[in-house]
Amino acid sequence: MKIIGIIGTHGKTSILFILESLFSKCNKNVGVIGDLGVRINRNKLSINADHEAIKEMKRNNVEYLIIELHSVSHVENIFFDCIVFSDFNTCGDSLEDLTLYRNAINNSKSVILNSDSDKSLSVIKGISNLYIITYGLNNKNTVTASTIAIVQEKIQYNYYLQRGITTMTGKEVDVQEILVELNLIGYQNIYNTLAAITTGIIFDLNIEKMILGLGEINQIPNRLEIKKNKDITLLIDLAKDSYSFKMFFETLQYLFYKDLYIVIAIENLEFLSCEATINDFIEDFPLIQGANICVVGKLTEKLLDKDSRKLFVEVIIRNKIKFVHYMTFNNYLSDYLPKLNKNDLIVWIGCRTILKDMF
Image 1: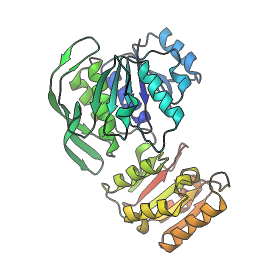
Image 2: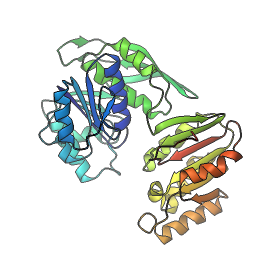
Image 3: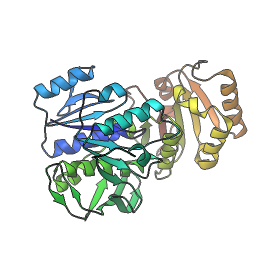
Image 4: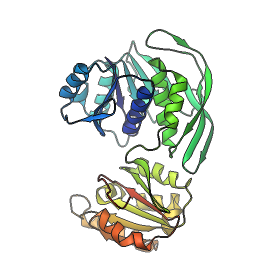
């Protein structure tokens, strides 16, 4: 069984979901362990412990196992054929995260690394006997994207392999350029699909089938996921820190909508608890000032202390932003759906619940 590990601050779940789709498209027996659960050939299993999940994979003759790595314990006694390193956030990642990254890479034959990410190359410094493939939008990378076009709910670019690479079976793959069309949104999905395609190539997956498989992915659960209710659109994402918030709001600039309604889970407000951060967001994304903002959840001292809460409210009032608070998202929807008009957009940041009936 070949084992692929995915590490990094952002994008792990999306890369895992895309990889699972590509291996399935190429008729491979694939298993996954990650935030979206434990699955074999897309069938979800009711297993929580990782070691039990791995045993189940072996019993079912899984050819390729893809694991989303979150803690040092995940890499104990596991040797990886490949590590996909999505990014390295020097502000958000802890010493434990860095230990996880280095341990995982030390236990791997190869790494597919986003070298556009801050300090990612420093993580592999001093690690020997490692086959390294870099990806990103920098033209020095092994793999990059060219001729990028983002229109509404679609992305198009050319996957450009700038230097030849060697697959796990020793085959040489020459320089090439191939058109990729995605039914996904978000600039980060260019990076995520670059990583996934490259991983597929080194495991000898058919490139043409992978490209077809990418075009068949319409949503990644809770990751810039779009839901429709008649003429109203709901966009869901689990943005959890300043980087993912910024990427999320940059994505909104490519979408057409009439009025914007922003709903944020209270636990996702914690990093916005200083005036400079809030002001930076309002300055970077003036669309916020024209939006209706709602915070959902129970306000507690643990999540947001009194001073931070007061500061947040003061900045909201000073910038004349419409603001409401609800205990649950479904309560908010019950009140607001009847008021919405054609082409209005609701964005739900921090969604961890399944929406029923309304969308």
